[in-house]
Length: 354
Image 1 (spheres, rainbow, N blue to C red):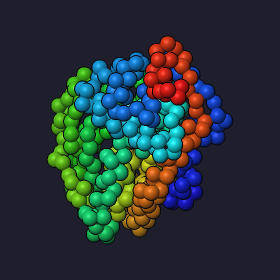
Image 2 (cartoon, rainbow, N blue to C red):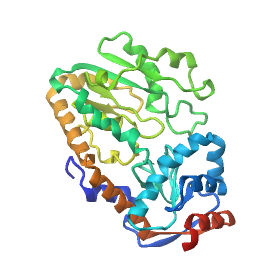
Image 3 (cartoon, helix red, strand yellow):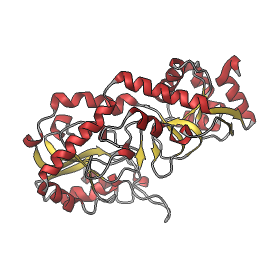
Image 4 (tube, helix red, strand yellow):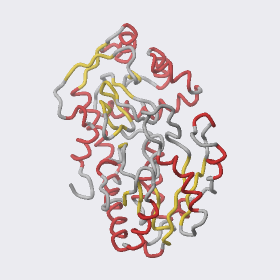
């Protein structure tokens, strides 16, 4: 594989759960963990149909009507558009919002776990938030040699900050920032802290005051790109800033990715596209020292990141690739009702063609 993933590499990655499978019919239980959607449904029709199944009812109870509309427009409408462009009218499943869960049926997701992808089919959902900043990099970036050697990070307190059960998943890497911010206060080569604290006290395993003490002023993209070494940390799923950092002349320092999205994070290679660090950030000081001692190698890593992101630069190719993913799904996946609620929901999603 080259540093720039090919069209075929990406298609195989996005459609991995179904790409090599024969066409099959999948029963949709009433408890399916996604929304049942029809390509021809309007946003209003989708909002009306969403409560037909428990998953949709849960979303409707969690979000305001305006936010729910935004979620449908962001996570369903793009898939519907790709289906219609491909001339397909089959119903499909889609997950709203950030995701780390393994889907039990083939459905479109923004993100999925690399080690446990389930049946999630990747699509460019919430695309503007994750990819639009890439276009801003050229206007504010500077040459690698003109950047300082500091290690910098800003981000919100997203991800897991509590482990209520002994076998619970590990903390988010962002949890450990509260410790690093304290250590960094005594260093002039670290600027690490939370730019936004959103955690309620009952969802944090340290006093909330400790988290707030690690808050630091917001930094613009231009300010962040003044440094060679930028820490990248996953939150609820992927890091939204990873794409524009890869596209810049700075070096991402980050734990091995656990989640992948349209940006193909699983294809990134340590010491080629990024410098790896432990998931609990316990070796960050040593990693930063290695980066400073290996400046030429780090410059090459920054260039490799730019080459990687070049694969996503052509909007016509991106549209064609998304359409190919939709066609793969339509060719291989037929949804059938597995319960009375699913039967009614599927009939609504399919329309007269069902």
